[in-house]
Length: 425
Image 1 (cartoon, one colour):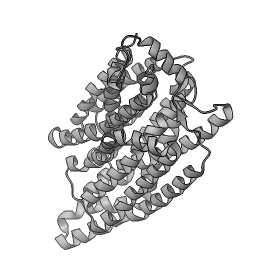
Image 2 (tube, rainbow, N blue to C red; image 1 turned 45 degrees about the vertical axis):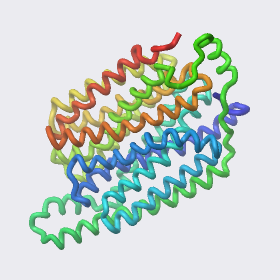
Image 3 (cartoon, helix red, strand yellow; image 1 turned 180 degrees about the vertical axis):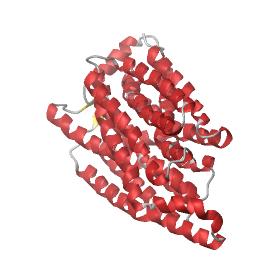
Image 4 (spheres, helix red, strand yellow; image 1 turned 120 degrees about the vertical axis):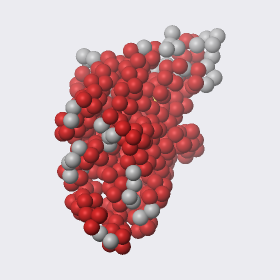
């Protein structure tokens, strides 16, 4: 695939626009890390129930994956992104009645709608960045987008924390035994209402962005006829009729599913895990920022090193291996050291996403859009893995539950070593 009339000038503009969208991805996505422990208190949830925050948000990618391609095909790249931002604004708006009624299911519906809008944006933006230049440097461009994303992710829980009185949440949790049922319920109602103002602000920003994108000078994306011709020659006699006939794409979907699962786990569980290790919620709110900083460091290394010093698949091997080591550190250490290893997983996760996309999309020709849609559906791993962690945390404890990450990193290591070559000639 390629953009129409590519040039240095036409590339810079789209990069800035897509970079701003990746910032929004990060901000909206990593708010969940604070919502999990906060809604656990406000809505009186178990550990397992609290992780339905990530489930509702990321399962939308699985549901919306096939729909995303149709939306973009029907409305085009630019209008499709504007529509998706409006959908996200509706999702944020649902938080207002959810807060006033303190109804957990409404919060989850709002998160699902937010995730659905993001699924459309991701379907458009990730392959767009991949094809803006040579495939060999795609990981570098995606790393730049990742910095925008993770910078927003570092800010999100801190900014939301300014609106949420976390010291009151900790106090309320400690004094619940000394309160009457009526006083406790009233305190929880007041606590839930604290999310109203920040989410009104999010609605306004999303609507402004939707208008800006609709007016922006963004070139459309089209298939690359030359690449298609090469693929027709490559697959002569065995013409492909479906994206599922590319094993490296299907395996890439599995790798991305597991990767998003462990990435979300590292970012969204660290605040709750810090609290479980005895850290006050008002202090633990900064822990997600540590995970994001680790990821940004990894992205910067990727920008400098890929592909000049390190190939994309080699970077992926290093990240997967370090993920296994750091997960062992979480499980076999204790206290703040164990929490620090969770933050270090951010570094392990940094260059996996940028490497999976070009490795999985290489050689698919006219199936690039379909392959991208399939990969975006893999983001649903962020729904399943953290929820499974929550269930394990209720059973064997929050620390031992991190065992779930080990097989995920092992499969990612396999994909980096040989999985991305399966089916290629």
